[in-house]
Image (cartoon, rainbow, N blue to C red):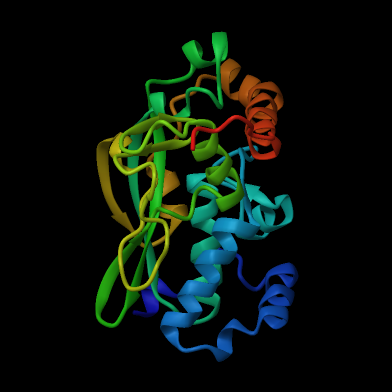
Length: 239
């Protein structure tokens, strides 16, 4: 299992900010299941759903940003778990861009690639791999999204979600797999020991113009759209 605990350039868990967080939270003192639950819940809810400058940033930068999406939240989750001696790996995919509609709109949605790079963390606990994709959306955001679409109980696609159980998606971890975007998967790249290895082989399909536009304009629009949903007051809900 040493392979699944090593530190890398992206999984920089020796960074001072990560070490300070570990000291403050005391996760190392928990048993394995409680440790995974606590770290998973931290990354899911205390790191807001949002779009970073790229998929390839380090875990310490994700922590410093305070927000992330599937790939960057996976990076931080892996680093924190490895720092507390919980083996893990990354599973790479692409997902259909339809699940981002609403977070991204108009011309930018039309220009975005059909297939978007996606990943989840697989954690080794009690001699079994568990899939932790449900970490992507923070609960306040997901709750507001559910309130604003209260008529939908089953399949929902958009705003960072693609699930068949929108009313009660499997996002809580207790020795089970968690999911929130898995229904959008359309290509499976398999498992990788580290995100460094994954991203050396697979990147978002963006040309230079689109990459520049995403980093400097589009992601800020997307983050503003997400924040509006998170902060919106919902009235006149059906009883």
